[in-house]
Amino acid sequence: MINFKFIEKVPPVFRNKYVLTLLIFLLWIVLLDSNNLISRVRDIRNLRKLRADKEYYTERIEADRKKLHELKTDDQNLEKFAREQYRMKKPDEDLFIVLTPRENREVNRRNN
Image 1 (cartoon, rainbow, N blue to C red):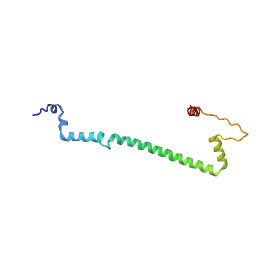
Image 2 (image 1 turned 180 degrees about the horizontal axis):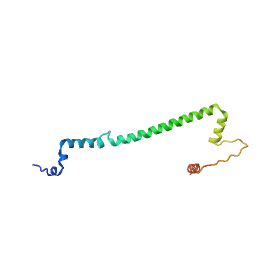
Image 3 (image 1 turned 90 degrees about the horizontal axis):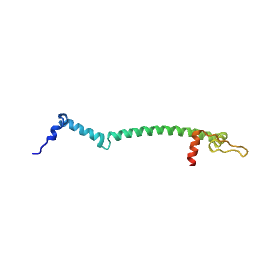
Image 4 (image 1 turned 180 degrees about the vertical axis):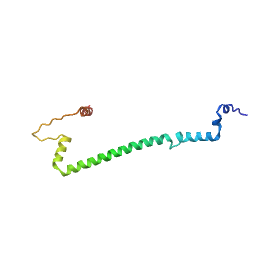
């Protein structure tokens, strides 16, 4: 006969077949299954992040549409946009660019 003395050291609660089955089931659900709880929580976090990104980009697209409509309908807005974004100037003008410290750091990063 095989000596099963290690079974006697296990508390009686864990020797119950229903408790043992429940523990194995919980272990399977939490760790081993392809749709386990750990990956499910990770997927839920990722979904929240993607929804926030979608909302940000939707707002950004709407703002860009408005700006594009303004540029297409008014020549003064087109000139203003060209001067601000591309730093265009008329031949007889001088252009002075004032940067915030944050913009200055960004320019330095791009140049290095």
